[in-house]
Image (tube, rainbow, N blue to C red; front, side, top):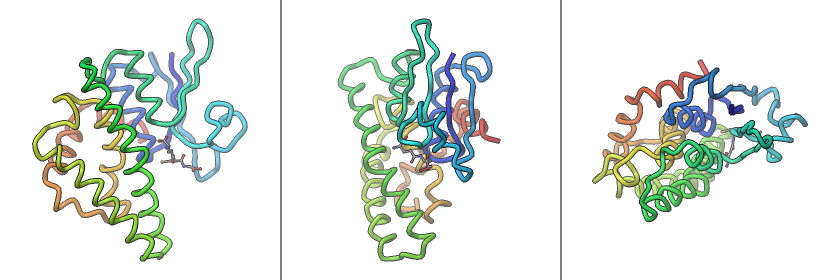
Length: 206
Ligand SMILES: N[C@@H](CCC(=O)N[C@@H](CS)C(=O)NCC(=O)O)C(=O)O
């Protein structure tokens, strides 16, 4: 049994989409605990014992030999993919490519889009522009792949897609990100949104 700690945010939806895509059922295979971020649930001592960084998502795997905590969305998805045997290509080169796109998201897309949206709302337009420009550069890197492929890696839906989908799906509303120059990324978003596991993962927070 897995307990997932999350919220309806670009990082939070990754874990519920992954759990659903791996065929796990809410209530039977996993429990979802939704944290109220504006109330500061993520900074409470009981949650800091699960994620010392005080952010969502995180999971606890209640195994026979004890509880295993996993924090940082990339680590969570990698753990789930390895444990349940899906969402990662078997071929070693494609597997590490999927992990590379996972780091690409946590080191690039996430921080830059997060800052762009925040600075826009604060009215710091020069700072927004800096993060917006870098976000566009990063999405153009995704476009270079997705203009010729349905998924980021190995012709299959993987953790690489889920990691980046969380942010790309929200970017237009979160930071007024214009997807028009990226038809491959736009088609990939449409493809992913049409999947039932993605829909179930997104609906977990309704
Ligand atoms: N690098 C982290 C980022 C996690 C993160 O920033 N989560 C946000 C929600 S999208 C959060 O918990 N914010 C609340 C806070 O910072 O107190 C990951 O990929 O898990």
